[in-house]
Image 1: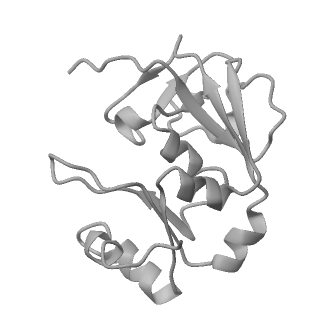
Image 2: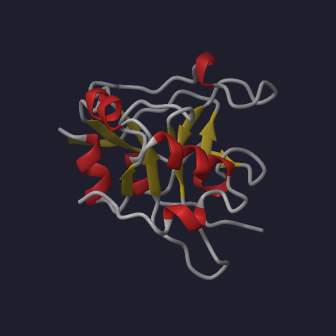
Length: 169
């Protein structure tokens, strides 16, 4: 399957002063792949990473029936922690040169990588990561621990639970 190369890729960070992105050892998803710079062709997905979180208390994803896809969903079991960490940030626009994706790794064609340093071509600064997510179409949900656990343990990856939730406005 050949995928058309996007015009631009996006990488978000709470740091609004990045001049160049370097592959970093602490962000390795596969030891054989080694350090890489991550990017996505989907600005909404990039926005979902403006607030530093991890999979232990936040889940990011979307659902597809093969024809249509839902918007991106960000579900967290800790509203206070999420909002405390939200200091805003920037979505950087990156050139596509040197980036590739692997359908069998990470988020597939939504997660592009580059083994080299990458200089941004533009940046958009946001004062609130949560608001940027909402403005770009990410559905944000704050749930209790029981609901979060049920989502993580469900056979449908949380689809039936998440699609029944009301997103924050």
